[in-house]
Length: 322
Image (cartoon, rainbow, N blue to C red; front, top):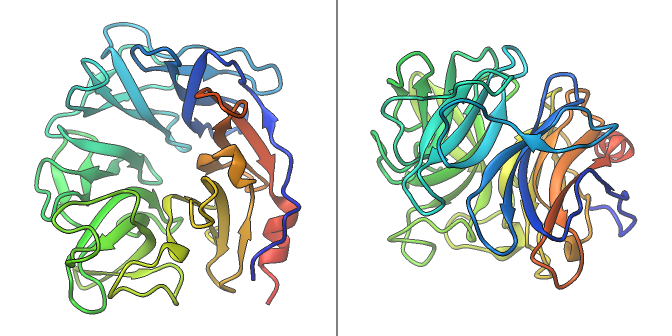
């Protein structure tokens, strides 16, 4: 089941034509948001914080000695700490950095060079990344690290598909049953898909499974073929709902621009949340599961993007119906 074209109206928190505001993450109270900001005319990307979404006023998030380029934040709801990618500039190699929720004195985590999209486990002791560096085989794959010292806990939690083919994987979203279970943007390493290199524009959403230390992965949408890429199932940047029932993801499967979709894992029902003309991406659930925080275009023909939220409570209810 896919919903019709009555999409919820976004409420913008930022909508300046001067900035590309991107990849938001929200805190455990549902009231504060961190996101990355890049000037439309070019310049370094930095993390901004809105401390109260009812009165949105962005301000720089980090203080103390910080990497110049700051991207891909993730907020741990249990500890209040934040992970992000840091680099010397927007084109330099990235590493994973950690910081308390106040943003003071961030620290680089060892062994995480070329590890992208860090996402916390539920208790904040480990994290998973799209890893093209330490222990990545194939590259990229999703790797679990310890927050204490950056040591590798599990080098590749994607494993193979049902045909035994190795998986490329990235953009992980952590299951509400916790690591090592994830949803991720992936593709089998087969000729005619994206081999010899991973391409984030040719992904499905995959779910991994783990039995006796052996990892396998299958498409979230059971009808998605794994022998050849089908753009009707394209998807990336998944996020798991707080109750574990639903995955939000972005997709350009309509061909008219990126939109946010919801998939209920029990029923298989699918709903489109945003108009493709808005180019919405990188959605995250609010802690109560009733809304999504996301980024989308500010105006037609502009490179600028803003941060907004949408109410999905009615969609979530309808998706749960058989």
